[in-house]
Image (cartoon, rainbow, N blue to C red; front, side, top):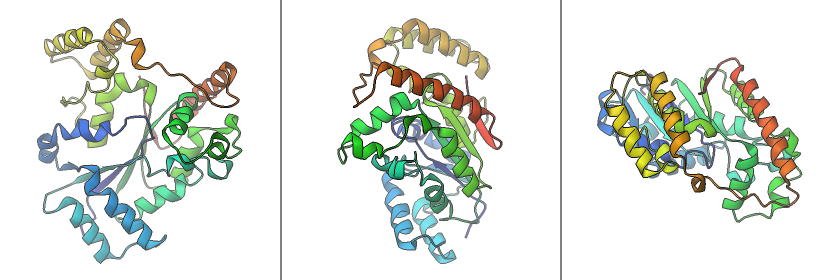
Length: 295
């Protein structure tokens, strides 16, 4: 059993990257392979992981089972870093308020995937989102429950990502965790990709503009690509600043318009949740052991 392979779990959250981390990185599959990094198509590992977890019922797999699982994923390739992504690693989204607590099973669920390869180094990556947008998006995307069942008597004022992150850290103390805000993703996307892949900060990736393309006009994208291509020696901080300037000028308002219509929600609800989220970001930024990617 190769215990030197670093196992990287991207935990989501739901409706943050919408599988884009996988497909953006896979554009550079050859570059990743040269650096010993593997990111498979989700269908090639998700059923294997969920099946093993269900079979184990909380126990750790034997060495034989670990070897079989790892071999089924990496085949015969030389791998030093294996990336796997699933927004259900935290828990089934429609049950994220089960028992009246926001992702109350996140610690247990992450421990289960971590224990699939208990002797390998492990890292977690998590994109978070303003609950004022996140909750409506998750609720609207599911059909299992009415709102009252979905929210399960949870007090909205108690919804904090910092609590989820702290619970994951407590259950998996040896696993570094990297966190970023979904709202910042268009600007920091290249950094997110490189950190997940464990690549040098100056590495250029084919998918590094994949997020910003969705919310900028085509004219803006064309000008941005031309501007950056003509200045290959810019640092990432400089490139980030330029992406921000272009996004402000060529932003498509209709790309992110969201109508929130949940029972009992008002503009005051949205404002209160946003204020709590802003304070929570500050707390997360100072959590020991958290690598927080920010603007």
